[in-house]
Length: 228
Image (tube, rainbow, N blue to C red):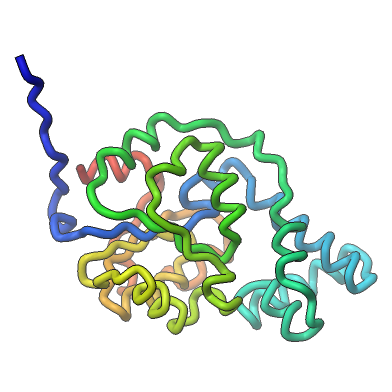
């Protein structure tokens, strides 16, 4: 007797969605893992070494560049002409032991119909390392990283348009899931349905006010299961 395989059906208002755009850090894995704290420390260390600064001064410069240029990398490239590949390799050389394979997230992504793309201000190599540790790499059709953005980071509207064009994504049938509220502003302007994965990080909450956020969730996996 043949098994009855039921095609997953999305709940309203997601029935017309055919593309899922995921941020990486603090989105596909929980912020509670503190994994991005390691990246943050590595950025400060890199600035210390390259600019011969003490920790406090390097950390201040890191945060200044983040505020003014969108990422510390962009600031370091524009002001100090550092090699991007060297920077990305250094700051993403982190301990992934806080992450473990996530069968629950794997199952949630498995039943989610449509294409899945990672859109990150980090590197493709970092995305691959993280998703392999989580056991979910095979679910993603592509990664659009900071190199693909030509080192112009989110939330610059230009890179959103380039990402949509690269993968022939119709914004009206796409969802973007992101932990930094301000990065959802351009997505909403383009007609993408937006989902904010809420964290307690001050820099992630910035821009949370306004009507550019369609859905607020505290647990990505739980939310994915709830809409299928």
